[in-house]
Image: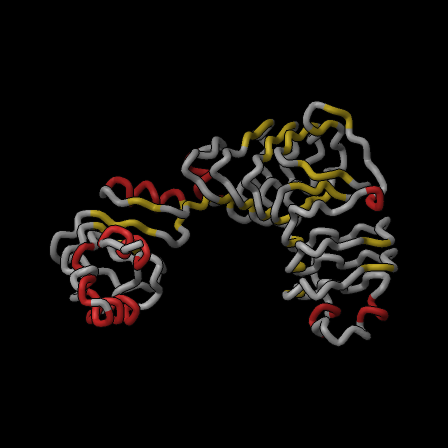
Length: 312
C-alpha cells in the first residue's frame, strides 16, 4: 500500500515535536511540502517553528503558556486548556473556540443553576450552599465533578449523573439533607457505604445520608463482598473504596493497571487483597490504615507512599 499526501498529513497531525515534521520531509522526498499543507498548527509553536507553517488560518493554543501569533492569515483561535465559562463567552464573541470549559462558582452565580451543554467539568464548590437548587441534571458533556460541588445544597432532592463522569470529588454531595433520589447512568453496584459507577475507570461516592431511591428503585445496600469488580474496569479511581469498613477481602482482576490515591484508605476490615503484576501504578496513601497494611508492607513492589497519611 502506497501512503499518499492525505494519509501522511493525518499521521503527522499526531507528531509531538517539530523535529518529526522536519525529519519526515528530509527523509522522504515525495512528502516535501507536508508542513505547508497545514491550515492549523498541530503542535505548539515558537518563533522558529512558526515560520515552517506559513499557511495557518486557525491557531490552536494547547497550553496557557503557549506563544500566540496573530500574524498572517490567522482568523480564529482554538483554546484547548481549561477556561471558565465566562472566558469562553468572551472568546466566542471574537469568533474563537474553547474545548475545555469549566463551570465555576463565579459562573454559577452570574449565569444561573442550569449547566450549559458545552461545559466539560464542574469546578470546586460550584453549587456549594445553593439553597434554591432543588433538582439538577448534569449534561452528558460533563466528565468531572469537582470537590464539594453540591456541598450543603439543603434543598436538593434529585440528581441525574451521566455515564461520561470519570471523576467525582470528595464531599460532592455532603450535607445534602433533602437528597432522596439519584439517577445514575452506568451504575456498577451499591455497597453499605458507597455507590460505585462508570467504566473503564471505576469511581465512587459516599452514599448521601438520606438517599432512598436510585434509578427509580429503592436502595438495597449490600455487603460489598457480594460484588466482583467487572473485567471491563482498567483503573480504580481516587478514594474508590476509601472508608469501606465492611470490606474484608477483594479480588482485583488482571485488567486493573492503576490504583488511585487513597483507593483502599481506612478499609479497616480488609484482610485479603491480591496484588497483581498488572498493577503498574499505586496511588498515594492507597493502603493507609487498611486492615492488611502490615502484610502489604512486606511486598517490596509496593511504594512506601502507599502507606502514608491520606487526608480524605
